[in-house]
Amino acid sequence: MKNIQPISSKKIKKNVVINLEKGKLPPQAVDLEEAVLGGMMIDKKGVDDVIDILHSEVFYKESHQLIYDAIYTLFQNTEPIDLRTVSNQLRQTGNLDLVGGDFYLINLTQKVSSSAHIEFHARIILQKYIQRKLISISSEIIEEAYDETIDVFDLLDDAESKLFEVTQGNLKKSSEAAEGLVKQAIDKIQEISNQSGMSGVATGFTRLDELTSGWQPSDLVIIAARPGMGKTAFVMSMAKNMAIDFEIPVAIFSLEMSSIQLITRMISSETGISSGKLRKGNLEPHEWEQLNVKVKNLSKAPIFIDDTPSLSIFDLRAKARRLVSQHGIKLLIIDYLQLMTAGTSQKGGGNREQEISMISRNLKALAKELEIPVIALSQLSRAVETRGGSKRPLLSDLRESGAIEQDADIVSFIYRPEYYGNTDWDDDERTPCEGQAEFIVAKHRNGGLDNIRLKFIGHLAQFSNLDEDNGFEFQSKMNAIPTSSQPTANEAFGKVKSEDDDEDFPF
Image (cartoon, rainbow, N blue to C red; front, top):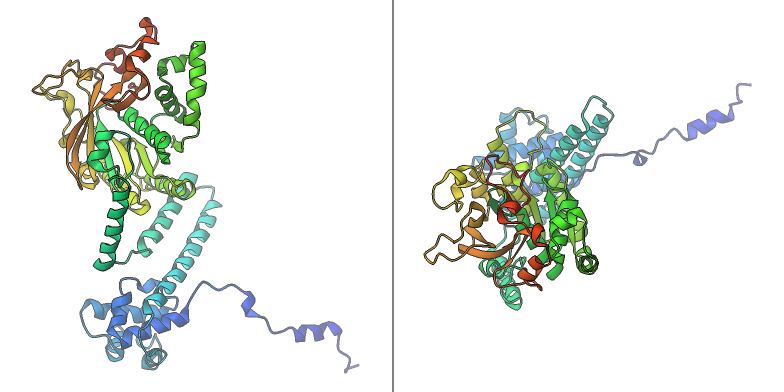
């Protein structure tokens, strides 16, 4: 009996060894960590190549973190970096035994013969760290998502903030040599020459395009005006020009008006039928035919509208990235800046001026990141209305933050003297200003300044070149509207109000 063993126990003994390779380990590259640290201790060039790429947290092994901290301290103090100085620095901080003593440091230097490819190795280490960080953040998000006491929008904001922190903290762009940059600049100049001098995104407004060569990639453009001047009408006219005439994909983030209201404006501008008639729906048979024919171009235009209210800068960044990757967006329009929120979860953290400053900085960073122009509409202060004489806006009239002027590459204003009851421009020639607007370029970081006059058709909420009819005469469009329904300037734009919001103003 004693020689008999159960069959099941034999099976268990045969399978006692567990294969650990089937388990999961955090992403790591310990061998490359050893190579990088060894290379930094035997070659000063190795330190110069990776010191601005790595930080101690990117190393997987804690002992490697301590060794890198010692190297970094020596670098900051402009002291020599080698096996002996690193060992002495670790001894002073009491960490030499924790890393394995001098024996471990000697092994690190013996594993490499030079610092060749050290930057490439460092970037792999950084990638592994980012993978570990993403796993950690994802785990936290999953755990918090099961917590019913956490507000879902706070959870979203916190998740975006953590991911943004990983991006900003670790994906650094290295400097480039002048030789390569000069070649890139010459290639760009040659490309511009082939495009008849238009290096940016064309607006369809001739004099403005001549001044700016189109809106330039990575530029932040501020278009500011008092309520009722036509800020939204201008960017919608510009978006229509770009998307229909030049087939340039445009994204519009409207924090004030709904997407249907905005597209109705564009239909009015494209068809020549007043927005008032479109709202009421009382169209004549020929107008229905005109609507159905001319709206086809607009329906095929690459225009994308997002009317999310109280949009945060983090939401905007995420949505803009998707639009650029999915639809190749070449221009971003925000209507308008003061309706955005910083999107931080900290309640009461800073005043409104600080919040606007933070938003404008992030809009400029977004333009650089996506390499597209970002246009943000902005309000002006009441100082314009209280000023005697000309109501033409000044840079000092920008509302809530001087940071807007500082961050922007172009600051421009829209001014219509007709809105204030004037019949002539306030210039020496006293030329009539009826049905006209002035686009004032008050700051231009990379070019000149100018006051550009445009045609403004009120009942269509449309801007166009002053010497352009856009395919149909202004007077014929006015004649197509019954006299009783033709709006006067005051009816179309209302009187000047003391409130700062655009709520009661159609433009």
